[in-house]
Amino acid sequence: MRLSDTVALITGAGSGIGRATAELFAREGARVVVADLRLERAEETVGRIEAAGGKALALAADVSFKDQVERMTAQALTTCGRVDVLVNCAAVASGDDILHIEEEEWDLNLRVVLKSVYLCCRAFLPGMIERRGGAIVNVSSVNGLSGLSEEAYSAAKAGVINLTRNLAIKYGHHQVRANAICPGTVRTPIWGPVVQKDPQIFEKLSKWYPLGRVGEPEDIARAALFLASPEASWITGEVLNVDGGLMAGSYGMSRALMSKEDQP
Ligand SMILES: NC(=O)c1ccc[n+]([C@@H]2O[C@H](COP(=O)([O-])OP(=O)(O)OC[C@H]3O[C@@H](n4cnc5c(N)ncnc54)[C@H](O)[C@@H]3O)[C@@H](O)[C@H]2O)c1
Image (tube, rainbow, N blue to C red; front, side, top):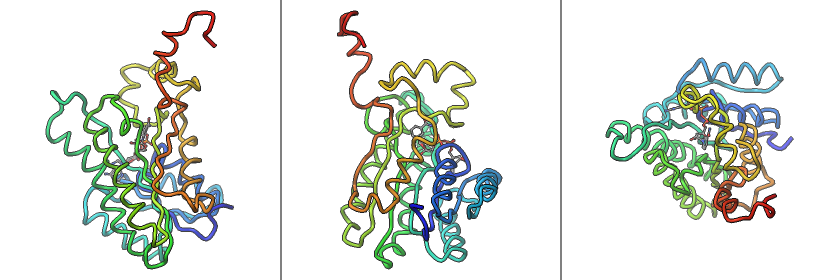
């Protein structure tokens, strides 16, 4: 078991990548605090973990608000005593073109995607520093690395990457590690509104991925497990793309350049 004797708090763990990460961490021996805006979703994740023999606690919190993060922190520490691993996974992704996105929508994306990471790191860092050990895994996105539309979400995800690197250099000497994951397209409920408009969206997007498919939540959960575990004890400030090769280059352009005979 790679996370035995570990308490992990995962935000946004009531769905998608956060849920898969919570379930995997619990299977690896962690006691998991499942935090989500929607308590019923968090409780569903906890139910799945407990049914598989794991230990978990459901907490409701909007992690983009300081008072709610403070309450969540107090509840987690009272029940579990400490938090060794923090996975910042909660997010929204809404709005688009900068000429059309409303100010409230812009603010919402920045608040939930970026400010929540600041609030949660600030809440759990002191304990990690005191115990001289801890791991933070921030779920960013390929949108934080490249121009792929969804401007507000993407700007916030780029901020998450820079915040992660600053955490790594500042708190490394306290033995606190901070790393980010940049997933490509992953089949989760966050895509609900897009899938409703275009049920074939994942098949269409697959052609941009050198590995020929979009991701599943477990693809990201496995990377989070590695970064959270002692196996990554000398890795900090790293930004790990888990994206089926999307960021390696332009697959579409390379195919256009290749002659038909050269195409694999
Ligand atoms: N699915 C993808 O294609 C993809 C790609 C790149 C990055 N990501 C990132 O992965 C992470 C997980 O996304 P997902 O695809 O699993 O989405 P999801 O919608 O399935 O899960 C997100 C969860 O976050 C919760 N949440 C939203 N706002 C919150 C708030 N203010 N406070 C607490 N919880 C809140 C939701 O209730 C939900 O349970 C996000 O950071 C997302 O940006 C996803």
